[in-house]
Image (cartoon, rainbow, N blue to C red):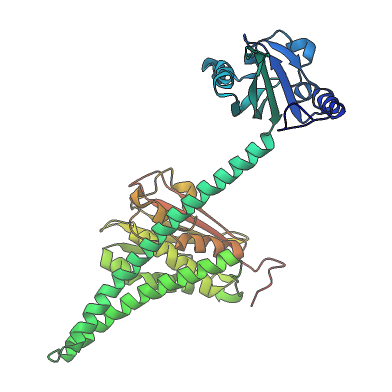
Length: 385
């Protein structure tokens, strides 16, 4: 019977395991070191993982394996002390290779004692777990990204609720006034334009949300038709004059006197202009101006939508076309809104194989959007119905 009935290893198996672990395996590094932490043994796996041969490391301190910042913290000493006191010193940390690169080491140090219990040294068993560290880091980044998206989503939901409440409040008041028995006919007639404006605001918000879902699903499409540029510009400007008048902003349209024939999706084109003009009006102070200037070159129409309003901060400028940028940047001074109109605008322009860019010298220095759209339907751009 074996002396210890807790375990039993045949001598041949023990020798085979020792040979495999010390000479053959490359997956696990085994380092023996004494009480002064000088390396006394080095297996083939340690050489494979670190690049150092046994001849190069024997007699060296184990601190050579530790990265500089961990050496300063004397973590090599701490690891050995923990093993001596607790019985095992587990660690997951960066270690160094011979070429100076780092690998994520996962392993432990164990104390080795003599027959009378005296401490004779230590054995450190480790493996290269860099791939697991990379996977863990990826999952950590994904978790952080999810948390940011959730925060953004919460912000957007709150802003959508606020945007919906703004027109609903006047609608509710108007309906209440109209239901009063003593209300006069002229009062009712005066409330109709108010109600229409609020309904239009809700309708624009809903349409923007629907278009955004189409963009994300890749289902937004355009239908080309023949049109003349100037009437479309005038129609877009007329659709924004009421809002501009309410905010005390002057609209200016400058376009060529000669009719410009174009081929595009007229409804989507007006949507682009309405979004840009309304956006400019929203961020222009009372008494300010918005200019829509149109010109044409040999292949494209070029639109300049400029205002002398609030401008855009440099940190917000690169993200201005991202969905929900405005809602997520409540402290940017850009005012209320859920920030999806410009994202939809960019998609519509891209579907026409055009470009849009934004310029601003900073807060309170105005903003300019530049849109370029081909005069004719590009070859191969089939309409998707």
